[in-house]
Structure formats: structure tokens, C-alpha cells
Image 1 (cartoon, helix red, strand yellow):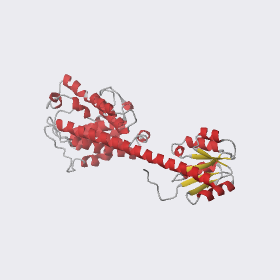
Image 2 (cartoon, one colour; image 1 turned 180 degrees about the vertical axis):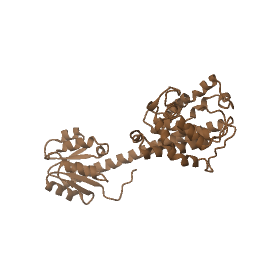
Image 3 (cartoon, one colour; image 1 turned 135 degrees about the vertical axis):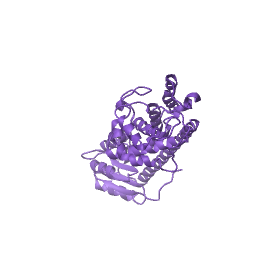
Image 4 (cartoon, one colour; image 1 turned 30 degrees about the vertical axis):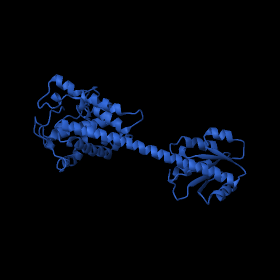
Length: 365
């Protein structure tokens, strides 16, 4: 059952005849908060500029300048306004036309107070109930995403432990990606793309970049030395395996979290110059999320100790990344690295993240 606020519900009355507005206000003002507009243009202005939208419109059909049908047509084109129910006010025989246009009901002139109250209260109740159902659907959808995220995060941790790692790598790369993304937003680089994505979902997807290693045999995943060409070809398949795992969790509806998981797991080893894998994509054909993860994944590998190498200094790691701008990495992303040097380095002085992880398997770059 939905909860109704103790505040009065707002109704907008739109009619070019002041007497009609006055009568409707007298009928309804004891129960509802009333706003008024004397024509269609002012009605639209009120709707667009109000922070708290009305729960219902009482809309006259015959008005000069912009009639009721035109106001309703405009509302239907707006993602917020189209959810507001409209009851047409009419003295003419236009009820059928009004309902076909998308009105939920109509009130005939002259007004009968009891009929007005009943029709208004019915539509208000229906609208509140619809909003309650939409809220429940959104809540369940968020819970489903959260469940998927917990499941995939657990898988990512298991893969890190299976690889004899501490599990911190997936969380460091997430925090590094968060820092890098914030800097890109601050500088305005790729502003149009970043303006269209869900930043939070992108960051939460970062730990899934190596989830496909669940399908790599132990003799390859845990090999302490350099991989042979044949072994490396098998290791490369972790990108497509990961994408298949993510794809299997999709339900057919748009899911920003899984979309970013898919892009990151499949494409984080593509190179800017087209010499990466699995599809040899190049430049901006590589999803931006994957380009960001490519940088932070390699950075973490460089400054972390491996069984086959010592940990590089942060300065050396930055030099290596900058030398690979335009070949391995997106040069615009590499261009903001100097601005986040201290923030990157700080991730490895935090007690919860240690850069020294001995007995690490081979990690390809």
C-alpha cells in the first residue's frame, strides 16, 4: 500500500475564463492545493518551472493561442510531464476526442461539485498508486542489480585468490579508475560521452575486468614464468570468456552495470593503435570504460611485486605509461596522469592496500 503525504496534493487548473477557474478552486481548495493558469502557454511555463509538479491538470479544451489538445500534445513529448494525468474541461461534445488524445477523463460544464470531486479524487488516487508501483519496480530493479553486483564481486575475489593474489588488485584498480574518471570529468575531456553514462555503475564494474580468468587452466594462470605463444593465446581468451559470463546474466532489459562490465571485461586489452585483443579495435572504437581500465590495470601491475619482477617505482610506472600513449593507451587519458600522480601513489600507502604481493602468477601487459 502506498503512503500518502499529509501535505495537500497540487492541482493545476487551466482555463481562459476566470469564472471557471474560480468555481473549480472553490470546489477543490479544501482538499487540494490549487494553482491556476489562464492559457496554454502559461500552463506549460508553470509546469516546466515548478519544482514540485502537480499531480493532476484540469485543462480547458477551447482556449485562444494554444488549445487544450496542443497543451496535452506537448506534455506527452516530455518524459516528466507525460506522467501527469489530464482531465479535460469541456462544454462541447468533445469527450471522445479528448480521451483519444490521451486525457484520463473529462468534466462537463456547467460544473456539478460532487462529480468534480469524485472524478478528481479518483484520478489522484490512481496516479498516487501508479507512482507507488513504479517506486516498487525501481526498488526491485535496484535490488536485482545489487544482487548481480555482489555475485560478480565475489567471483572477482575468488579469481584473485585462485591466482594466489591478495584480492586487493580488483579494489585498487576500482579506486584508481575512480580517481582517473574524476579528473577526466574535471578537465572536460570526453565530456559528451561522460555526460551520457552512469559514472557510479562504471566504477562498480571495474573489478570485473579479469572475471574471464575463471576459465583459464591452472597450469597457465599459475605459471610463474613467461608464457609460451600457445599459452598466451589461451590466456587472451579470458576477455571473451568474461564477456560471455556477463552476457549470460543479461535479462534483455537495459542494465548500465552489466553493459559496463561487458565492455570492460571484453575490451580492456585492446590497444589504441589496434594491436591489442580480442578484436584488434583501435582508437575511440574501444569503449571509454575499457580504455580507462587498461591504464589503471597496467599501472597496478607495474607498481606491484610479481614473482618474476620487483615492483617498479611510481615514477617509473608513469614513465612507461606515458611512453605508450598513442600506441597502447589513449593519449588523452594518459595526458591527465600527471594531475593524479599523488592520488595514485596514495593508494599504495593506505594500510588496506599493499603493493607487495609475493608469489604472483604471470600477468600479461
